[in-house]
Image (cartoon, rainbow, N blue to C red):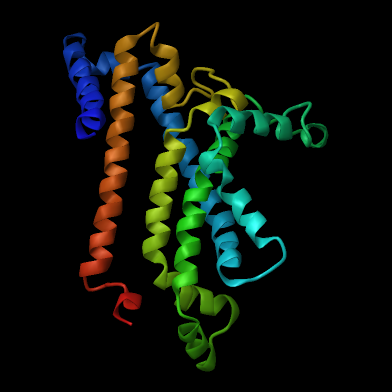
Length: 257
């Protein structure tokens, strides 16, 4: 199993290093440079929206009971197992010109398909469940007694959330955000259907790998290496966060209860 997992990664890196005689910079400039910049820009914007929209939803799912809550939870987690191409098709049917909301958006002068905004929508759709699920579990694990004690001392509403709930959940927030960002960075299927593969406009790093396989194989190899490197950095960051919050001075207070 270990060989099956590691050998393809080693082969990719080995083949990329074989192309060093052409010069790494000559490979990375042009389309690769544009794709890297676009991917980093769109994922940064996507993560802002994931936090702003996903945190309240995670709190509601963790702390409140309401009709059809299980159905809502199922819908939130569905993009995790949904085939990416189907996700792109669903987005196109919802926000395309002939989609459910397409005419209304067009009347407001908003066009989503095959634009950078479509990349952001696709990334939010496929990556937000990782953040929401992580934060939801953390919110649910916080004992109500802590919040009730803070409420007795005068904290309430948003102040209670900012001063008690959020600090106790920062580990889950950061870990979920990093995993969500990594998923958004590697998004392919939904993006190519909903945003297209236009160089310099909607061509992200995974789309460049797909498009460059027949035109510039070295560019595809090095883009793949960059994506794997970013994924490794993300996983290492999650582990460092886990070790820092578990063993450092800022150890998780809930673990000591």
